Length: 397
Image (cartoon, rainbow, N blue to C red; front, side, top):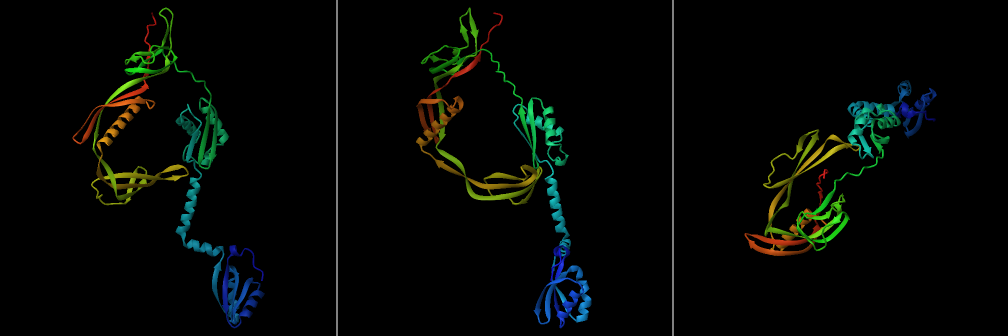
C-alpha cells in the first residue's frame, strides 16, 4: 500500500495483531479508509503493520468486531522524540542555555588589535575607538558600519593619513597608516673623543675631527684622542668629533675559587596542589596536607581559560613542590684556576664590550689555602677606549 506523506513529522506506530480473523481485521481497516502499510504476516494468526499515530484510536471498533488483539511494537517520528525530550527537561534546558550563551558570546567584541602605529600610542587609538563604540564586550549589532568607523577614527586621530577597521568574527582589527613626517637630526653640541683608560694606541680612525695621537702612543685616562676643534687660534671651528680608537689596556683581577662546590639536585619526589582560579582568588581543590620535605622548590603553572584569543578571568593553577638535596662536588686545582680565569674574562667582556680582544694573560701570584684557590691575574686586552666629552667654550670670547 502507499505510504502516507510526512510520516516522521506526523508520527506512526508499528503494531502486531493476533487473532483468528487477522486478515478480516486488516481488510476492514483498509475498507474504512485508514492507511496501513508494510503489512507482514508473522504467523498463521498474527501479522505486523504500520499506521499513523492519529488513526490508532480508530482501531477499537474493528478489534471488537473481529475479536483480535493488538500491541504496540515500536513508536517512531518526531512526536515521540519530543515527548521523550520533554521528560528530560533539565537536559533540554541545558542545551538551550548552552546555545543561548554561545550565541551571546559570539555576538560580542572580545578582542581589539591595533597595527601599523609607531609614533602614536596604542592607548590613544583604543581611547578614540572607545569613543566610537569599539571596546571589549560591546555588542556587535550596536557597531556602525566599518566604513563609517574608519572615517570617524581618522578624524579623531592626529598624525594619521588613513585608518582601516575590519571585523573578523568577534575580533576587531584597526590598521593605522601614519602621516610621514621628516625626521629632524638630533642637535649635538661640539665634543672631543677622550680616552677612558690608560692604554697604548693600537688602532685609530677619525671620521670627523683632528687626531691627537698615533698608533703605539701611550695615553692616560682623559687624554684627547680626536679633537673637535679644527683650525688655529685665529680661525677655528668646533664640530662633533667622530671615530673609533682602540688600545691595549691592562686589567688586574684578584680571583678566589672554592675547591668544593655545593649544588642543589632534585630527588624525584614531589607533590602537586591544584587550584581553581576565579579572578584574583584561588580555591584549592586537591593536594591538601603538609609537605614532608626539609628542602624544596616550588614551580607554579597557570592555565587560564580562553575564548577565541582572549584570556577569561578564571582558569586552573597547579603548584608543583619538588624535594631537593644538596650535593658536594670537589674540583681539582687546575679546574679551579680555569674556572676563575674564565669568570674574569666574562666580566671583562661584559664591562668593556664583546668586541674586546684578549692579547695575553699572566698569573702574578697564586696559592691554595682553606679549601680555596687564590690568584692575582693580569690581562692585556685590546678594547675600544674612546668616549665623547662636550666642549665647554665661552661665547663672549
